[in-house]
Length: 173
Image 1 (cartoon, rainbow, N blue to C red):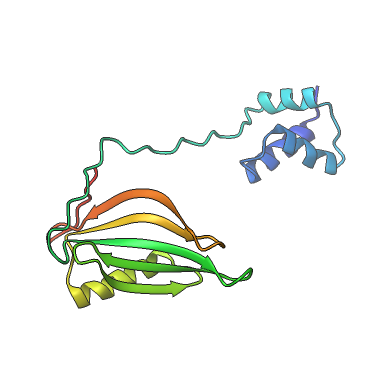
Image 2 (cartoon, rainbow, N blue to C red):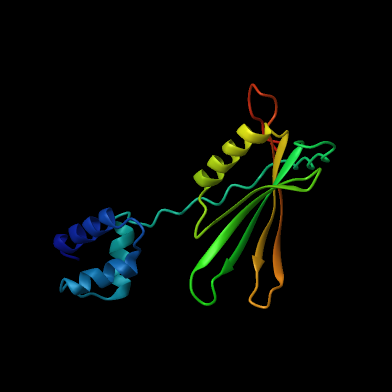
């Protein structure tokens, strides 16, 4: 029978480190001078009701996505493109390009070492003040400029319908 000190120590470690399984707990017990066989350690681990909580799976999109509407007039749809490159072998930078799909006008080019979602939202708000609100905004692709000058493009067809001035609604449900 295992001593109650070992059981208490196992519970304490498992309480602090929820993602640790019996093997990691065994290593920490060994560091504290409590040596035991791995089979005994596993038996005690199960008897105490200790187990690593399983993570839930990733949520999948339900239903089908509505295709993006055609841009029939200016300000009908804007597309966001993210380009990435680096200064030689050192610092990387990203460029956010916002394009009006009807007239292919470049509305905004923002370059920085990192562009957060909040920064993208600020840039879009500034463009809405200048050009007015588009009917739809889409993220066309992830574009990277390779060292040989060629572009690599990752497919993406996500679109957001901004709806009427009262509220914003997503194209896909």
